[in-house]
Image (cartoon, rainbow, N blue to C red):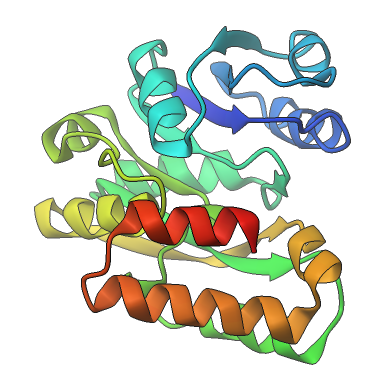
Length: 220
C-alpha cells in the first residue's frame, strides 16, 4: 500500500522546511503540498521536497484538492506547522493492514504550559468530538471517498470528516503524539486562546453558522 502525505499551506515559510524534512525522512511514497497562494516563500521551499499544487484558500478545499491530486492508497493529512512522531507512517500502515480504515494521533504542543499540557492529555481519550486536524487524520482512499472528503465548511471540517470515517469502519487512536505549533496561543495568550476555542466549539455544537465562526476565529 502506498502512502500520500497531504499538507495544506498558507504562509508557512518559517515552518515548512522542518515539517517536510520530518515527513520525507519517514520515506512516504508521495508528498503533496497544497499551497493557497502564499505571499512568502512557502511554495518555493516546499518544492525542494514535495510536489506543490495551487489551490483556493481554505483547509477543506486544499486537503480535498490534495487528495484528488495524489495517488496513494492511504491519505495522511498533516498541518504545515506540525511534526509526525517517529515511525508514524509505519504505524499508520500497520493499523490499516490490521483492519482500520482511518485514525488519528495524540497531540503535543511545542511550548510548555500547564493548560496546553492538559489539552494534550485530553487527546489520550478516544473521543470523536476532539478529533481536530492538528492531530493528523489518516484514512484509506476508499474510506475518504465514501465519506465524501472534507465537508465544504471553513472550520471544524476535520471533526466532521473524522465522525464520518468512524461511522463507516474501524477508527483507531494511535498512542503517540504529533507535535504542533503553539504560535497562536503564544501570540494571543494561552488562556485567552483556549477560552476562545472553547466558545467557538460550543457554539458550533449548538448549531451556529460555521462560516461566521470561522470569521471570528480568523480575526480573533
